[in-house]
Image (cartoon, rainbow, N blue to C red; front, side, top):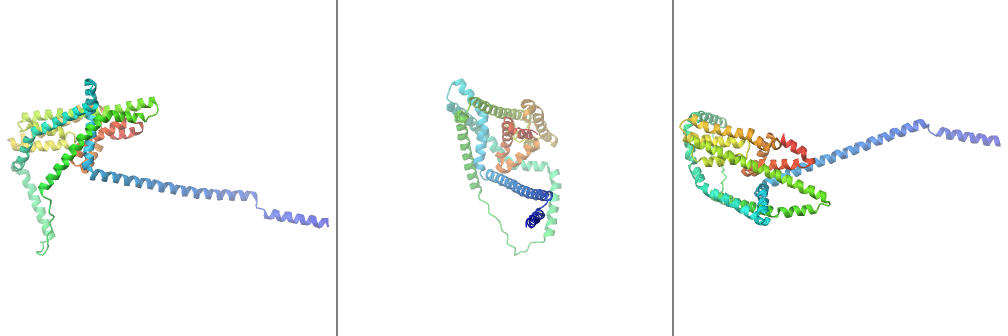
Length: 397
């Protein structure tokens, strides 16, 4: 009986031993299964990360398109606001100086500065209104005279245009008599001028009021921001940083404004020596167009050439005016401005040109004039933040 029991126990033990898997094979299978699960998890995680990155890129593109859309269709509001911000940085040192010297309240000093600037611009516009209206009224006659003197250049171009139009007519064939021509009627000129005048006056009002509020409330706004900072050391650092940014932007805007005024005086003197009419207007035009790099110099040279071809005797004399214009602008842009501002305020010419094109498309003439001051302000602001200094280096070229 005991022998039967022992044999049964040995048989059951052998059966259990035969049913149990080998330890080496089981561990390898488990590791392989674990690697497969990890690979699947990594693939799923990678897909999630890629989908999230694509989602962020898509949201960024949509947000950018939304901002561009808003800038374009709300330019009647954004142009006065941008101009007011530029004027604030330009006039803030003058308001602080007047407050410190005369011990007047900041709001009263801001009112004096804004009213003085408005009166100066208004008086200058009144004085220049007659010459500008004469220019505009005589523009058709001036263009006709210039066309007559430049006939030796215009005639070959006209012949080419006539030949190309004839080829287009032959290729298209004659129009059928039963074709109905549709023309779009444009709004009257008077309504366009009225709406333009209303928009201009509204923009001027927004700019003047906003400039005054920024100048009058700037100190109190800064104090409110500083109160949010917890420690005294951080408060001092924030005030120093804001003042440095404001000082850098104000210095940049005042310097380029003074340079442009000096350029206008030099060009007006040169045009007066050449015998061209209205040299003061030409100087003002040169000072204004100098806010537009590259394009402004060629526009001014072209206008100078048209005036010279009409009022001077020979084409050689007419070419002397635009030649002097380009030479003076080149010396200013490549010698005097870098020497005065330093290489720290050097801007990337390609990015400046792209900004001029973009802001000109979005805001028209106002955007073209504000493009360089705005990109200069962005560059100075980025210089004072460590995280944004790579952006400043890109803008510097």
